Length: 284
Image 1 (tube, rainbow, N blue to C red):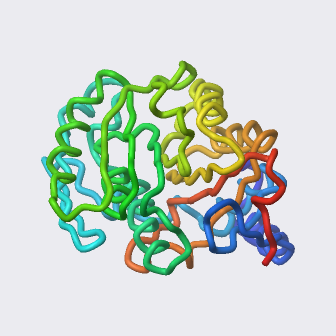
Image 2: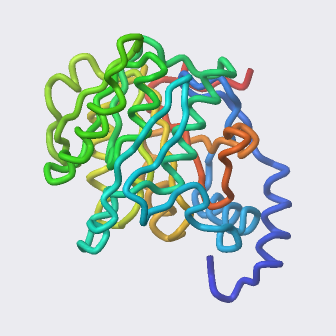
């Protein structure tokens, strides 16, 4: 948002634009989302109405802690963290962030509300980090492949092995290396996933192209992408939306659809589906 534009002006303009929002259903998500048609307008709305700078960061996580506990689908999840790894430049996946908590609990809430069916579905998670989102999806009954860079897999595998070992689990989780922009493991591509998940995967201008390249490889007309992110940098998010909207329908999930106890104005959730499938978008 331009430095010349005051918060009051942004809120006033955003409120007017919000009244004209187009609500649709996208892909396999049963709730209505706001269709994104103008990325620059979306950025103005987010920063003008949600005002993320005034919301508390890290509201649901403790990054100095060695572990984080959370309940989902009747299971207690214990996610190990490595706070010391944050000292390494470029390494952020060694601890949990609010966007991962919000997305994981959103999945649980959407399944409980019968707006999302994950049981028996094939799911790929990008940039899994500590693995919370993928573990929650697996506990819902999905067959999940959690992916990340080669040097991030040790902690990820430990969390998957620790939390997905229950004998009464309907789903499963496995860990796989995936470098965005390069060919994924053939097992991920055949068949293609029903869902692709990611939290805080829109973090740098340099990574946007490779992320979209990987999304295009992983998606066909039957794939629903669900991404969450913390509102830190408006320019990077706008670049992603401008690039993604060429190939994907994009919808923003309203905060009222988030888990009631795990909602934050610093976090946004988007649903994406490829534009080569007109059947994936509905207004009823």
